[in-house]
Length: 306
Image (cartoon, rainbow, N blue to C red; front, side):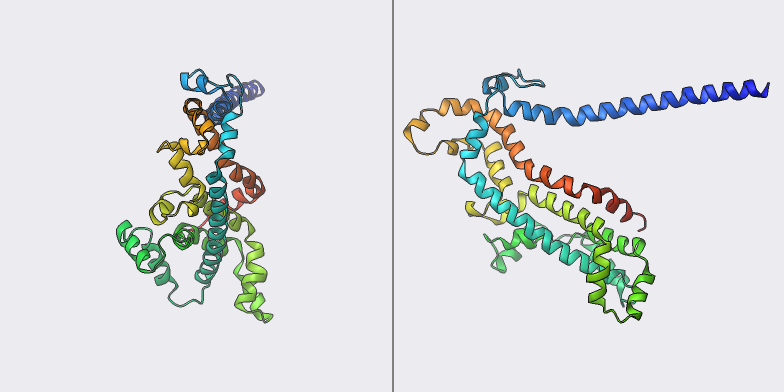
């Protein structure tokens, strides 16, 4: 009798497991479709015949394959200038942000730092209190940094969120006894930080670098406020001018024969918008796979303790 009951219980349990697995599979497939459909649609629209895009005939797959939109984009010189500026701003911001965040988090993670709690609280205030756009603009103007690269690189260099994540990683994932043993062997704080702490903090460094890089690469509001020279514009500002303000006539140049093709250009506007999205995301898609193996580990380890 007991054997029969056990078999029935096992049968019921296995059926419940199948239902749970089926529901999880269905939800996963639904989430995958929701995520992949916009990406597939953008790629298809960017290589479709412009009139098909304008008429709304592109649903999933391309209609009338053409690369004319990409050709126009690549011939537009400000795009390449924006690429160069964005790469410079992003790399500079990542380097400066990592230097400031990693070193500050290391100091705050030391138990022998006097006033550590007050300093942390003082830094935390920046998450809730802000001077606002106008006072910040006046301050930047007073420092003579308007229409220069410095506001783009220096503003927002240290995020308190990133600082807390790195400090938590130091305290929860790197044993304090390791530091004590290094001090006993005559290691200084700088050597400990450079030779021991940083090599062990590769996962969280990858997380912070990726977060800063993505935020800076996609930033357009700060450059739009503090930059007046189009030669200093990052890629996102040029894309904004093209997508929102409709400045697609600049693609044509000043040659009379090209100006006569304005009608075709207006038809290309829709497919070019989707092409610009693809062009602007390629660098992040190239970089992300190299940091992916560190990303999940760094996020989880940096969020174990508060």
